[in-house]
Length: 330
Image 1 (tube, rainbow, N blue to C red):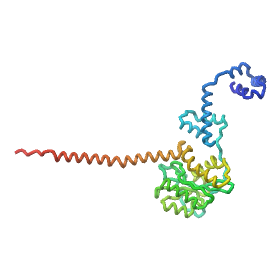
Image 2: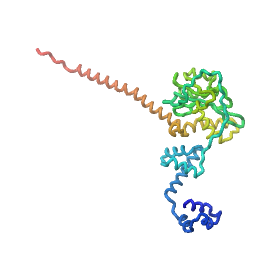
Image 3: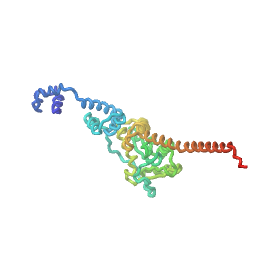
Image 4: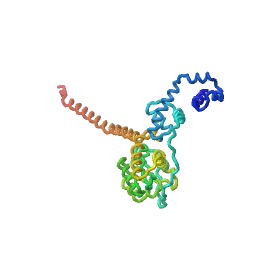
């Protein structure tokens, strides 16, 4: 019944009220009672939630869906169900940006039949620096394409290395790899870097760079984007949330914009569903703080107790030397 009253109220001024009451079969007294009824607490709460959700949605630049908005509300201490967030966003017309089809840019390398796939789609890692993925994507501008190479840590989903330029030569990939080495030094003989079979990622220059730092190379199968799904997912998010929503007149404009998004928003502000709606920087920092405290405890506790035991032993020895010896009975 309330839906009928709301419809009449919404169309009031456009159509005769008496005719609308007759069409939906409601009385005049019922319309007056509904109009004069005080607003319920549920309606007030819904209005407050709508204002908060619109604020978070605008701050995300219209990129967050109802799941990430729900996570933002939970982080802010606002208790609301996921279904309620979805309904409010639908009623307010808040629709997150959607992906669109992109051109395929991967160039297969036919001369790499012996390169192993060390991950086999298992991108789980127990610590930073153990497993990494990399890929190249493009950003269209009026001056031509700008190409972005990224290296992502599989543990925290943090972009630890990135480089963007107007070319797609091997130097672009080695620049991103060098940044990844500086930000998160690899574990020699343990760290794995997985990529597709593109000619730049599997070139002799990149292979030599990784071999010199003890990084184990890994590649997926030819034509199988699912073998490098984590990196492909990042490319899709970049296009959906940033590139497809703007028109870049120059390469320099695209380079500045993409660099800021990759280094700042993606690592420090964007909540990732794969890590329980936390930011990559938060996951990485928490892990390092925990293991730093554990390492401090292992290295400091033992010397401390060793010092105590030595001191106690010295005290006991000193007491024995000072105590008078008993004379044998005569």
